[in-house]
Amino acid sequence: MSSDPLLKNPLPAAEPPSLATDQVLPLAGTSVARRFPGVNRIVNRARSLKGLLRLTPFDTSTEQGRSRERYRRAALTTLSSVMSRAVTACASLITVRLTVRYLGTERYGLWMTITSVVSMLVFADLGMGNGLVNAISEAHGKDDDEAAQRYMSSAFFILLAVATLLLTIFSLIYPFVSWPHVFNVSSLTAVRESGPAVFVFIVCFLMNLPLDVVQRLQAGYQEGFATNSWRAVGSIVGVVNVVAAMHFGYGLPMLILSVVGGQLEGVAGNWIHEFGWTHRRMYPRWAYYDSAAAKKIMSIGIWYFVGQASAVLLIPVDNIIIAQVMGPEAVTRYSIPMRIFILVSMVSAMFAIPLWPAYGESLARGDIGWIRSTYRRSIIYNLAVFAPLSLVIAVLGKVLVHIWVGSAIPPPSYPLLFGMAVWTVCAVAANAVNCCLSGINEVKFQAIVAAIVAVIGVALKLFMARTFGLGGIIWAAVLANSGGIMIVAAHLQKRLAGDFQPAQGLRRAGETGDL
Image 1: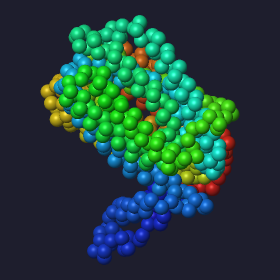
Image 2 (image 1 turned 180 degrees about the horizontal axis):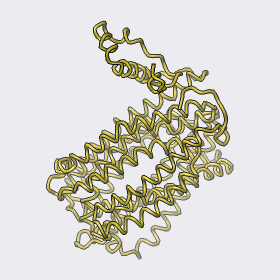
Image 3 (image 1 turned 90 degrees about the vertical axis):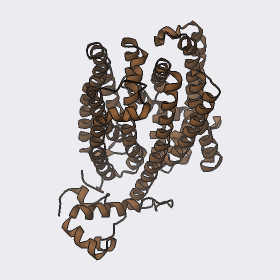
Image 4 (image 1 turned 180 degrees about the vertical axis):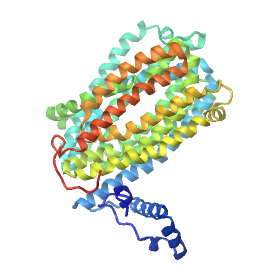
């Protein structure tokens, strides 16, 4: 028998037992399974995973039941995420195909550049959104709903204040900024639309800031399947809005409002459903605002803030550098193929992110062996599936781009496509590593490394963009990101090899699997 624990058990020992091979396959299939042991393992693994896709929760009074329930929630979240992302991807494909031709390369490039600039404000919540996920998952692990309620209300009112302050500041400086110069546009239509387009995007983004706590609450309780369902609704509404806006001949600001407004409508629907039916007690109330709870969330969130502020320099800054060095048309030539590879990273994240709150809840209960074995499976499976897929997409990249947008843009070069493939492999590994680090509250180290990588990456991108063009941008990102992920992965491996304590992360506990 193999000594590899991944081959011994499709899931950790606490998972539902698989049926024996002769129970799964008919007699003829049994001989095949004996001749090909890999078939046996695949069948057993499929049976085990199938047992997790149920709506009825497992009994969580035992360690075995808690392990099964974590996997059940993660499996449901992953499945719903796949379905939601499929809807979102289809919506994105439709939107891109329609709007590239409708707007033209310069105005579409302006849209993508504005998106990149606004996405740099992702850290505007001061990291409190991710800090709230960790706090909720810990409270869930301790079965303390009262603490979760204090965390929820405290985070909401702080984020509401932050959004109000930022909107006030933006409204004051908006009239004094030359937006056409900022985005380097020249056509009369793009010049006229640049300012209003930015205004629409910023207002919608800030409205979402406090409303987003509902999705963080669901993540902390490992109920991401609810979030994913409402995201799919928002994507569908966005496409309907875009088609309507184009039908009436509206310009770029209204197209942006159509897409982002659809997402906001999905969040609003989620808010009403969550606090009206599912978790009525968690509705944010000023009476439950607690300074100690707010301080705890912010103490966790500050390092997420550093990491998020650094992350905006890893991807969104690419379009800004390209716009300044090569013009908005080059942004379109870069962003279209990049969106294909980002989809691969997004799919990988669907399998990694649901484990984040599960790691936190497991840590709070002291189930450390579950963390070790689950992390190993996460990174091995993600790389085994998505690394080959990235290379296949690189080979077929020119054909895929042509099918997607036709002759609207020149075909991307192979150095650009293979650079994006390697970048995607780095992103896939980072998904598994960072989710585990976040779950066990090891955020500080990854934030510091991210900041260093971001600074080095921007310097490399500026140099290589001028020297090698579009291909230089992505290979600069590969050089910076690959070094960062190797350092962070080595740090995590060292921590997992030690003894975890629920309070700080370190204590010795019985194993439910090997690493």
